View (tube, one colour):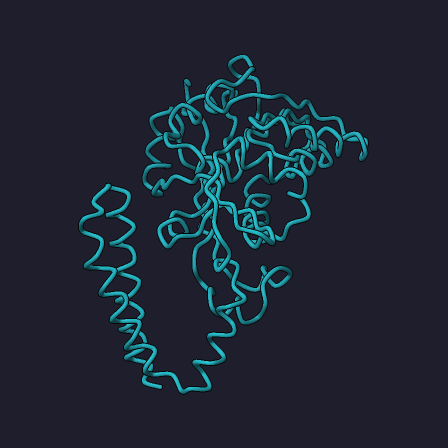
Amino acid sequence: MDTNLVERLTDGIFSKALQVRRMLRRGATDLVPVPLSEIVALSRRAQELLTPEQSASGAEAVAKQRWQRPTVEMGLAEGYAKWATDYDQEVNPLLPLEEPVVLEVLGDVAGLDILDAACGTGRYAFLLAQRGARVSGIDASEDMLALARRRADERGISVDLRLSDLAELPFPDGSFDLAICALALCHLPDIRPAVAELARVLRPGGRLVLSDFHPFCLLVGWRTAIHRPEATYWIQNHLHLTEEYVGVLLDAGLTLTDLRESVVDERAASVLSDEDIERYRGLPVALVIAATPKEGK
């Protein structure tokens, strides 16, 4: 196989696919047929490089892919209500790549007052409470919170869990030493109100730690998805480039202290096959940012 030609063809397909996504986001649907036609032409050239045996093997693998199922778009509340029942049982390849980085950035949390904003079923809230922090958690999904409360009771963990929107936190100014918001801001079309609220509830010298889908993932079409035998349900995601996260943090009176891009590697071995790890190796999937209030804020 001519690897140089394969690289040029796949680079071309990737470039044209990004053009299509940008056109769709701008509503320029009349321009889409040209890059779509170019993708088809490039794909045909790539297919010609395969032997009949390779084509047959590839077709068999494609038929098993989840994206072959029907897809259904869902709003945030509806989506997480559907997901809550088995959220903690579903394999999520993002978590083993995001969580170790977040925990390293968080460091020692013993004795701290911490807000877990968009806590979901309590993934970080429980971990931090078990490490000696006093934790409050908020989430906009009553279904996810109900599961979190039940899990907290079963484990004997004390966490203050409340129903709340990220843009209107039910806490006074300066309530927390640390706030974490994990894998949630990508659901918001405008992240400024939420970040401003997170900054407001921090004490002087406190820290805010954000994690999210890396914008690269959303640019290439990865989505927050619920996989069911009958269909794949997509929950709304909104693209925010890294510079937007940084700019919003600065506008909220915070100073950036850390920024990391977690890529696919062997840490995902528990949820991805060796083949998939090699397919996606080195691609950024999680963005983790830490910031602290500027002096005098």
